[in-house]
Image 1 (cartoon, rainbow, N blue to C red):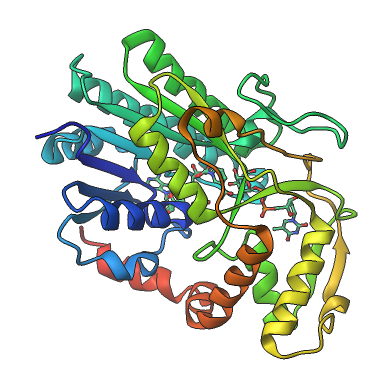
Image 2 (cartoon, rainbow, N blue to C red; image 1 turned 60 degrees about the vertical axis):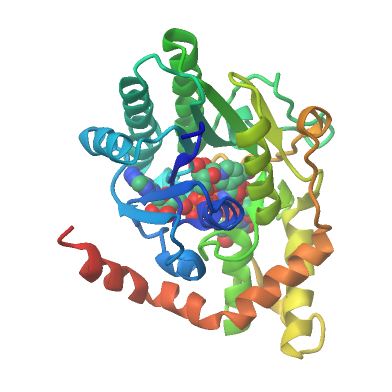
Length: 354
Ligand code: NAD
Ligand code: DAU
């Protein structure tokens, strides 16, 4: 069998992972796509209804920290490519429960790396361990500073970014020490369908439709660089197939927004799509206490990815927000199911004995 055809995608039931799974299942019918996910509060198989019966798709419920299980999965499915997305991903949660983040993001990544090393046993031809990381490992920029490049020194601030930085270092260590073929990418803030409604954009869309307050942290002046999730999935596809082993690539949209400006665009878009007067929901904006250690600004320079591999974002932000708002308003049942916790109960019953 040709190389890199049996692909383990971890965290495929989450937000970005579900878009990556869908793209690979649809675009590569001759690959075997193994989606391995623990189904934490953030994992939701509803995100993958449209591909769940595809012949090249398999789902396994497992914890990446379970090393023996990872070995068994590598052996059973003859895994030769890994796209590792499974993680605890929400900064606010990491401030409240840092141990969970160290366990999954650091120890879980280490467990997968060790399984790859053991099972590939020095035969690295046609193998790849591709680790998906974040721009937050670079720390925070001033408002007038340059962008993050691949040369920016790591300076994580939150427990989340510290755990991701640590996992990135382990990935590189497995390349430098044992020769495991690895790639790391660091991406900016994603938005789009299927994002858990604890993150800014889906949380605020949900709150606007319910007429609830929109809690803007601090003065709302923090800046984030937003990328449509399908553009990230396309970048992952490009890098998985054409990226150079041992390289790092930054992924971003050159699309910086102050939180408060973004929230106002969001309010106007939701109001318009709901048939309300534009700006009707602006009074819902409520300034609340700032996030602890809130990073001022993230902004990614992704020119290396464009010049070396030809990837660039395809969607303008206005169009992306329009599409995103429409998706959440048309999929209210998905939102209601998650916010009521009904989906978690369902999967506990379905998978509790496996
Ligand atoms: P998410 O929280 O939506 O999904 C994470 C998935 O991982 C869930 O399906 C969850 O069930 C699974 N998971 C968690 N712990 C697990 C474990 N121990 N074993 C197996 N599965 C487990 O996250 P996301 O926003 O889709 O992010 C995916 C990846 O991309 C993460 O590594 C994150 O750090 C990175 N990233 C996210 C963004 C963003 O804006 N969301 C930006 C850059 C990088
Ligand atoms: O930069 C990439 C990172 O982007 C990813 O690695 C993370 O997994 C992802 O969660 C995201 O992190 P952020 O902390 O930037 O995303 P979040 O949606 O939580 O917040 C975006 C901004 O909005 C941030 O400045 C905090 C602010 N915010 C967030 C929430 C949830 C608010 O003002 N109010 C809120 O209620």
